[in-house]
Length: 245
Image 1 (cartoon, rainbow, N blue to C red):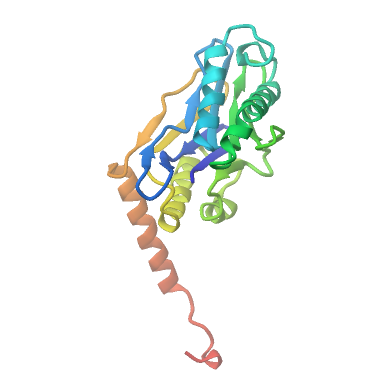
Image 2: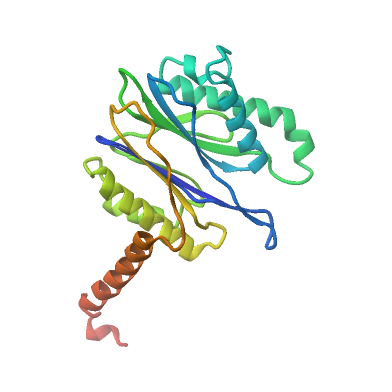
């Protein structure tokens, strides 16, 4: 399993992906699931992936190698919008799955899904989810985050605390706490966490930060949050005496 999260704000994007690939209890590996397309002066494009590892790597590698080639079906550099880029990712996913499905299905599910985000010069930052069928949906200020993979444990804190006017730093804290909740409840999601903060209109890809399990900030954040929750619960009023207990 995996967990990828992308947040879109008025100030930019916050992306986070875990690195655990699990093909059985004795086959656990660390794999990067957040990829940046090659540098270009007019666009920043990031792709996060979940699902069959061979499928996701085939899609991302094909798109990376085709960047700038001029190919109508796979060159993300020639696309005129992030919507077109997301649809090109979906089209490449369909092509890879159609090619490999009959060979893969006897052994497992060949499907995959992606989060595609970034900004083209002259366009605001945008964020899309590419479903396993290759079709896409877009995030908005009313629904400012998208998740793929193991999504349920990390969603409640985002539903409660995330809004479009949060700063990138505040959103990054919430993203990491979303991962903390997921990793506490599901061992198939694990560190390191690849984190990217992109400020709107910069049109320059920032470095991906790798948060290891022993990272001092990550350790401090998890400890403070856990202690804060315990203190909050202790401060809440007890149930009415009529309830018993």
